[in-house]
Length: 412
Image (spheres, rainbow, N blue to C red):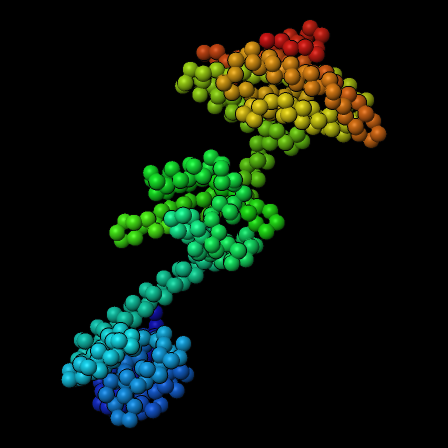
């Protein structure tokens, strides 16, 4: 059953017809407003704004068609649906009514079955329409979504997404989708999106979106939209803001002082490289580095100075390796560098480069300038049969050899 308090205005100069309609339709779910004088119809309709109007076509002085034509001139009244009450000989008038936008008609004499069926069918349709409209309003208010044409030109953007981006709607509509992101059009992500959509009609991934003064990360679904002939007519994008979630994830895997990966995360990445090496018969290398005499720095200048040394030392490591190489803090003044698909002779070149870069690095803190102490290096390469524990033990033992043999050296 549709929701209660549906309001229907009935306009008919026949008191008998009004009583029949009242008898058939009157119940707790429908409020009937009966009008026998058509001259009063427009003013009452304006006042009541009903869900539906039952309107007799043939009435003296003012016909149902005349009332309907006047309603069509009003932007609000023109939205109200009308079912005409008509005699069988009024076919020409009925055609005019359909031309003006009538949704249906009821024959005279009025039959209970026809009246109830047609009115209830419309009210059910109205209920479904209202539910759908409420659903769309909820989507627009609370879901980050947009629609583009096949060329990814934005045609619709939800109010929720506009609010999150803090960019006026008129500056978004008409843009190409990539223009509201912080991903360059030449980046690999777009190639992945286009290829995936052609093959699967659905793409999922993380995209960085612009805002007025900053950005946010969106877990994004892009789905192809087709017409009833299976022709591509556009794409729908649904975006879930995961900025805070990613920030928490980063906090969990990053060393809070140096901002490189912590021991837990670097261990996970080493394990991933082990599995990849086993699966594809590849190799990789590890470099473990320890700042020489770091305890002496803390004891002499204090832990705040030591923290500055650790951060500057980390910068040297990060700036001395490739983008695919991964720097992590193993603990204290020990660091690990993971070099994917790199044999030990190539990792030796990396260690030498770091060692040389440290020669030119100094730290300034509270008017104290101090060269960063030298560092000791241990290098190892993955070999078949290694696991995470054995591999870390190997590189740790190799680092110990450097320490034992006088520090400031590289052992393999």
